[in-house]
Length: 84
Image: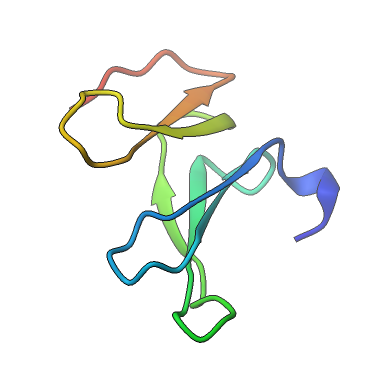
């Protein structure tokens, strides 16, 4: 992915395997976020794209609902969307 194709990227330990996961907003590649699950021995699995409902601008990872699990939030530049 070239830097001109995404706006933000974030890395966190999301999977129980202890490897880092990277999430990238696909600003110019459709309404989606790409998630790269880390492999325990190093490297990443191929990206899985998740639709965002709008032009993905920024992505953040935090325990937003305070349940002990990290959550992902995405801002959309071109559309107002609500969680389902």
